[in-house]
Amino acid sequence: MATRTKSAAGARHRALGLTDDDLLQMYRTMVMARLCDEAQFRLNRQGKAPFVVPVSGHEGCQIGSAWPFRRGTDVFVPYYRDMGICLVAGMGPRDVFLAVFGKKDDPSSGGRQMPAHWSSAALGIITGSSPIATQIPHAAGIAYAMRYRGQDAVVGCWFGDGATSEGDWHEGLNFAGIHRLPVVWYCENNRYAISVPLSKQMAVANVADRASAYGFEGVVVEGNDVLGCYEASRRAIEKARGGGGPTLIELKTYRFHPHTSDDDDRTYRSREEVEEAKRNDSIILFGEELKALGILDDEAIERQRGELKAEIDAEVDRAWDAEDPPAETAADHVFAASGETMGFRGFAR
Ligand SMILES: Cc1ncc(C[n+]2csc(CCOP(=O)(O)OP(=O)(O)O)c2C)c(N)n1
Image (cartoon, rainbow, N blue to C red; front, side):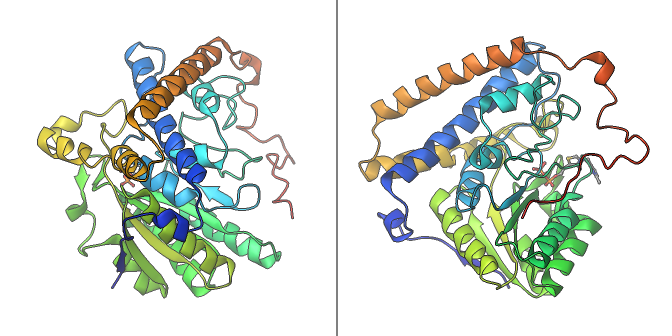
């Protein structure tokens, strides 16, 4: 049975070793993700962005869970909804919009992949394929390789609740359990796989309950409690780094928008349900927590929002004006020339 964690209120961040400035940075990153999301939807409605994948609603669980990783050495294996994870890993709004517009300098694929198929060799972000859960065996394999090479690194792998019905998911977790690999699994459980509700995905109450079948701990965390996500994640990362093996962390969350810009969620969930979830928005809850601690006030929140919006609007314009990939390079990195290794050089020690 999975354990359920919930942190005590108060200045709990100090007990977690976080400074006031850390909290401000976390909050800023959450708002940045939200505003990038709003901008990409606007661009979609303007006909400038053919397809976008929303993050809104998931910011708290993404920023909280990714924050304790060591940038530069640890490895991030995100899925398409993980803009917030990639912002923590070191991407910025320009990277988001270069991908949205399919530009030459899109760091994820040079404009070859769909948007939200995040990737950066420099930042340790592993690209994912569109088929759900294919990143799970990749994450297990990377963790195995890193341990085999004696590297001091932990792999974080994120996915939705729908991914946990896939064979790849079970194979990857089983392998990680057998070899006690340094990987932390994060399920962003937003209760739907597009239109399919959780009750049609599994017959147990929590995704985390499944961890016991693979011989490691499963933990359920309220996904809109940023510091609760941080705390559970940090503990699991430290455990993995110390040789204690994997943990499955289930982050209970909700997506506020349709699955993608091509979905109509009115066909499978009520407006009341969506509005109810929005009342528990992690950005509002964290903002209230920071106000109660005297770290932020309403004026500072508004000012920061305005500054971030201006920054994001400028990055949208720069990305829109950026160069398109030259037509003659359309097949580069898509088909390997005979004997070519697709550019893979192995992970640096
Ligand atoms: C193997 C496979 N089956 C179906 C799809 C179509 N598909 C794309 S996203 C998605 C829903 C996945 O839901 P979940 O894992 O819960 O993540 P969420 O989108 O809710 O964040 C599906 C079924 C796919 N991409 N790959």
